[in-house]
Length: 114
Image 1 (cartoon, rainbow, N blue to C red):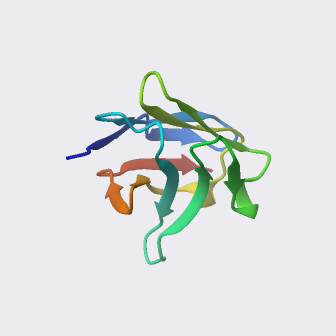
Image 2: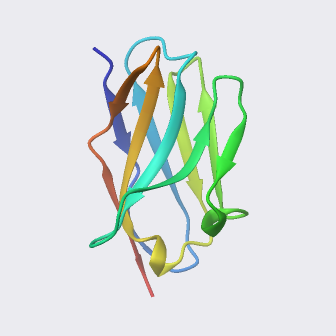
């Protein structure tokens, strides 16, 4: 059973930075990974994703500010978030898909104060 454990969330002032980590159990080198977020009263949205070949995609609202990266040796995916804005406040979830099976982390809270 694959487990995803997020860390790195917290409270930061606008303009600041945070780095989220998603540690996966097992060999996930062929997995597709994504970071989602869900703000209060809003639907969960995909923020960034990375394929097993390293291709990345970002939602327009974070382009140029967020960077997703994967470390296949550590089985860890990162989300570097710079120039944070209050509207980035949300619970951030790590998602993985491998051989048709989908996995979610428990979520980590990111709060950006103005």
